[in-house]
Length: 329
Ligand SMILES: Nc1ncnc2c1ncn2[C@@H]1O[C@H](COP(=O)(O)OP(=O)(O)OP(=O)(O)O)[C@@H](O)[C@H]1O
Ligand SMILES: [Mg+2]
Image: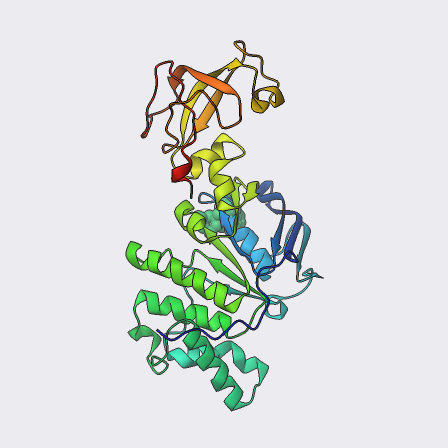
């Protein structure tokens, strides 16, 4: 496979590329997005993750300029996007349906957006070729879009967006039409491509494994609100609440009792030993056999598991909550 050209742009930095400030999108009294705030950094592979209807596409479309916030501000690369139409934003979007033109061949599809830039013919050709190399489609330029497989169509859609050299690429469920094997292959390729071109990617997905596998950071959303923004590892190991914990992979919940006030977690939580009970969550691979809870407090199981224990051991009163570091990501 030919190597993508070297990055011309900076890699990941701490500089904010997209800033979402208190953004709400209402339809009548219904809030599809409710007071969302978020900063996405330059060069980051960022995912918006959440169940169907939680507002992911709504947010992506407002970044792209296909819709406007009811209130709040969006800026890209330090510039407010208020009043700026989609085609003048430094963003480009890849749609779930790919939206490629069936009557045009691959090259013509990729060159489509370049026409309005009125480049020299040779420069246009060079940029189309570069984009086709980036997505590993060299040699297929003359094929009609209807003569391509699902995965190849996906690549045409990507090339068509990349050829415009956006600062931000917005991807709405780009892999959902592909079968499982191809989807997993494209996850790896998409991540590699993002690292090669070095631009900011914002991916919308409802597939937690996809988000965990590909992203530098993830925003987990429910019901129009952002519940947590963190790295995959942090979200997996330290979900902010039960909803996030349950959405991101298997989680077992048990009722636990603090038995000794010797750990920081116990003191910080203001829990009283032998009096307060709380629900504790642990991942199936955090096998239990020690008397230490990850928070630092000692704990023992005193109640029924809230749902099936998916693997590991449930000790009837036996300590359960030691982390198995060998299985961490
Ligand atoms: N034009 C509209 N008018 C009214 N409600 C809308 C409109 N567009 C979206 N919504 C509602 O806003 C909510 C968020 O929609 P959105 O498309 O952002 O969800 P999503 O997270 O992308 O879901 P999915 O994973 O199914 O694509 C949904 O409840 C949807 O029905
Ligand atoms: Mg959507």
